[in-house]
Length: 120
Image (cartoon, rainbow, N blue to C red; front, side):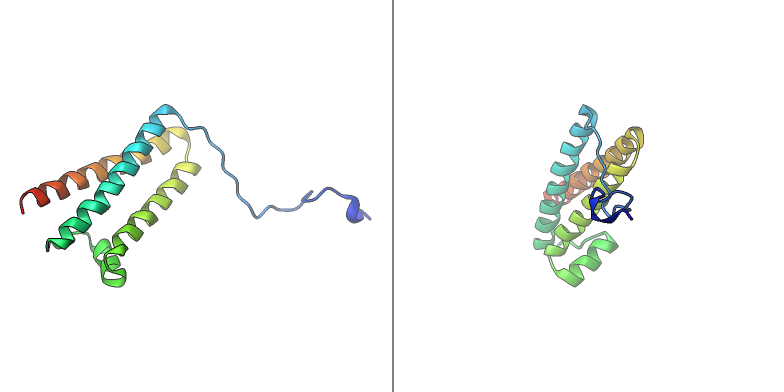
């Protein structure tokens, strides 16, 4: 019988899923846009809420109702975690599209938040 001389983990099903991928320059640029726009989204949203603007996103309203103002940051963190996992498991071309889509939506939201704040 094999006993304890066998190599550790040999024949075992690993419970750890390891994903390694390269970071092309286009992905690095998109990640930068995503992170900066996400931070600005949180800041402009909190500023608007402080000035009496009502949150337009139903999911964000639910997070606000449950967790207060920190709920906006929590929601953004959840969205970013989903994006990281999506990016990690998709092939390069689809991962880039996911990043680009998130970046575009985030930049548009920041733009709309900024216009709303400027109009107050």
